Image (cartoon, rainbow, N blue to C red; front, side, top):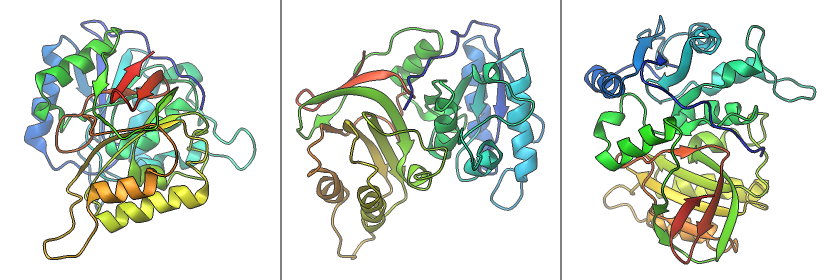
Length: 309
């Protein structure tokens, strides 16, 4: 993975564009609250045409959603891109970024490398866009979506707005599972989305990264299946450390004999000899502290911390 740079710090009055690259809008009230939070910080927030469209479970056709992304990227006044919600569909927009010949990823016609130097904010299905931006050296933010930000506690909101203002990020605290400490470039992701990016040009090189993963709605046996794929594909072979966020709505159904979420994670990850810190405050259905992609961090499994270098 290449080291990434954060975009220029945001200033009050800067224009932020809202796009819906994935699932169709379902949470109008939450969206309105999210827009107001960003506007209350002095930013101009404007929607790209088509954000409310629907094509089945997607927020419009691939061409329409791709046009939203391109509009935001090519607008010279736009300083940041706020993703409306997750769901599914982001990866579909990147098919025209991939080639069968080196380089494996290149920007579509009309998008220049400097166009990517904008704040990209989102998580969950937005993992695919965050990983794609990182391939061009831009540090997107694994951070609350417009439809989830209203549920964030004050510390998480302040962390996000400090980050986009160019201020250093404080240490995150969790529970260490042993393995010492490691430094590397931070690669946050939704586990399910990331698993389906393995082996594609969108996947960054994983050598030496601190992998930070979370998920939602995956039963323990499905988490087992996902992590087993990472193991069998060799994707974890050269990872430097693993930071675990929240795995929400992942409990087995009542009356269904199952390993617990923690038992699965410890079984599939605990024998890798890597520093692991669990219970870090990021992911779905709770505190979702911002994690920039491609910045240097230290993971300390003795102290249970994730610190930015």
